[in-house]
Length: 108
Image (cartoon, rainbow, N blue to C red; front, side, top):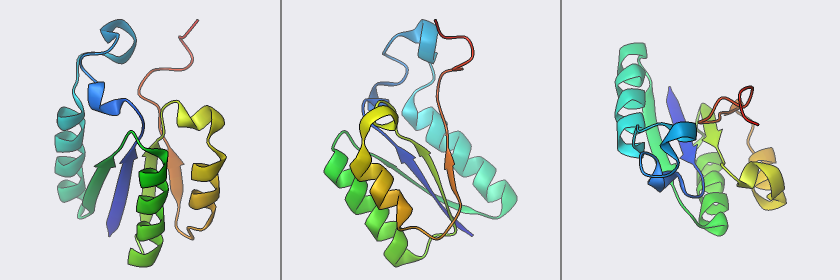
């Protein structure tokens, strides 16, 4: 099983940016833990992060061409306003799961 993990804008700053809200875990830490879990479950995880909306759409298009089995996406701020990423995701025929770094139930 091939799973694509998409990390959105500013996620390269995890561990540095607002640790009260986002914690001190870095993107490399997240990807290492995700890869380890994937191996444990027999899945191959390919992680991708970009600060470019166009590059994110291109990677989603590539996921379609590659026939990935599932996509996990934490689009960051793009979750709120990117019709381009939403439209790119709509081409996929595999399951898409949206994730968030912070607990949205505790934010003010």
